[in-house]
Image (cartoon, rainbow, N blue to C red; front, side, top):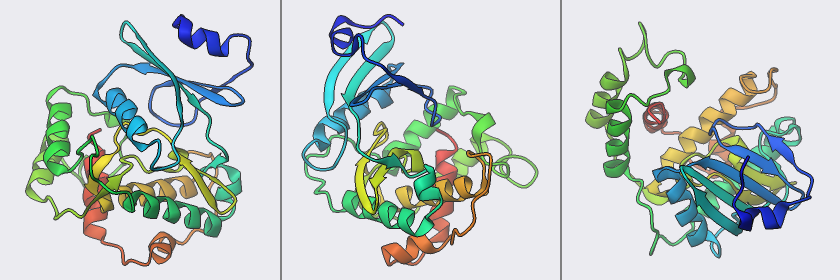
Length: 261
C-alpha cells in the first residue's frame, strides 16, 4: 500500500502484524508501540479524529502521532493502547473481571464534562443519519440480527426507521462512545486502559452504550465471533456492576437503531 511520507518515516523497517478483529472495514497494522489505521474518508472518520483530539486529556485514548489524507483514504498513526481487548481470552474466561472493567469504562465516559464536546450524537442527529443510510441503500442487511427483519420482525429498513422515529425515548445525555463493543475497550487486569474506534463518540443517551455493550457481551458469549461459546456469563451482571436496573425498552431501541449503521 502506498503510504504518505510522514507515516512511512515513522514505521519504515518496523515489524508489524495485521489485525483482523472488528467489522469496521479498516486496514489495521499493529506495531509494538503504534497502530496504523487506514480507512476510506467519511463523516465518521472525521468525527473520530475530532473526538480523539478532544479526549486526549480527558480519557485514555490513543495519542495521535500522524494523520494524513491521500485521495479517498485517511491514514491515522496512533499510539498503541496498553492491555487487551475485552474479547480476548483473558476476559472471556473471567466474566466477573470483564464486567468490572466494562462498567468502569462506562462510568468514566459518563463522568466527562460535556462542555465543549464537538460531536452531538443525540437522536435528533442520529435519526437524520439513519434516514440518510436508508435513503442511500447503505444498510448492511448481511450483518443484522436474525430477527430484525423478516416474518417476525420489520419488513425492511424503511419500516424500522419509521418505528424508530415514532418510538424515540427520553434521553439522558452523557458522553457516549457510540460503539461500546468488546473489541473497542481495553483493560489490564481489573483496570481500564483505553477506548478505540471513536468515530461515533459524542453526546448521546447513556443507554446507547449500555445497549451495545449488552449485545456485544451476548454475541461473544454465544460464540458468534469466537467459534465457541463461553459459560459463566450472567446477562444481568453488567447492570449489577453499574448499580442500575435494565431498561429493556431502551436497550431494544438502541440495538435496533444500530442495525441501520
